[in-house]
Length: 277
Ligand SMILES: C[S@@+](CC[C@H](N)C(=O)[O-])C[C@H]1O[C@@H](n2cnc3c(N)ncnc32)[C@H](O)[C@@H]1O
Image 1 (cartoon, rainbow, N blue to C red):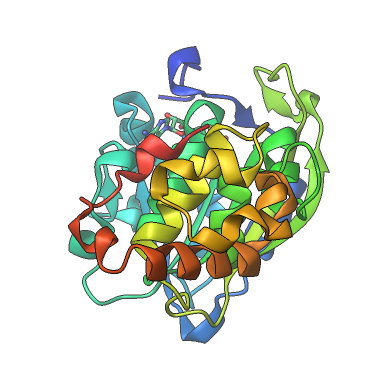
Image 2 (cartoon, rainbow, N blue to C red):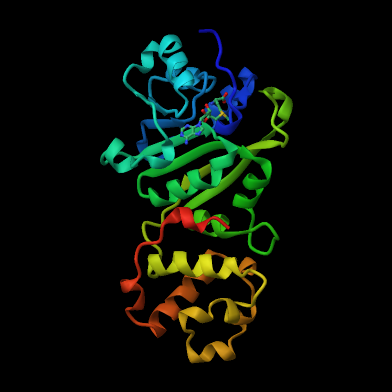
């Protein structure tokens, strides 16, 4: 088996430039002595080969495509039993790697890149670093500061727990087949925040609600939560979701939480996959 036939529905665009592949793997910094590296969607192993060259990395891969899995087994026998032939989105990382801190890397399938980041958020205590190639627009959105048009739910939630670096842009012609859009590599590094200074469950819901009606002022967008009386006069409620940074969302969540004391304890956990805008 010399090659894998690209399948559109799996977002398969194979990177054909070894220098870019080396640069992507080289962007890993492995903070806090993290040794476990999980690659999502290795395909024919263009990144995997460089991961395996580094003895400091314990590399595992998760790949949904059976043809790619067969290819990897033939060409990278060193991976042995560290190939998970399954859907990353259905994996529970805490079961796969109990009590271990992880770095995640991959040229992500663009059709599920947002869901991959929600999965990262759901496992934020374990995932200390992510180096990923994604659609350029999504990369810009993640790293964007408040105030810009593309700043959204994922920008706020990821920036709450990760420092986000836009590393470099990658043109379509270095892939087989070339995608229609430009790509970019981003690095997420876990920050010091173990837990936000507010009810986190409520924080996720407030951010979601604020952006779902992003053209409304926060006073109108957040009305369903029941706002404190001073909201009628407070200037922050005149703003829109895209104008608020993480700290301001934390402050809002504290105030909504105090006003509705204990209310969020009754809320079921939010399915992070429901957060996509
Ligand atoms: C953009 S390709 C990248 C392939 C390879 N890493 C490269 O750079 O050439 C995305 C890869 O993710 C795999 N993939 C798609 N959906 C997946 C999922 N839900 N879980 C795991 N792998 C997935 C595809 O089969 C494909 O190999």
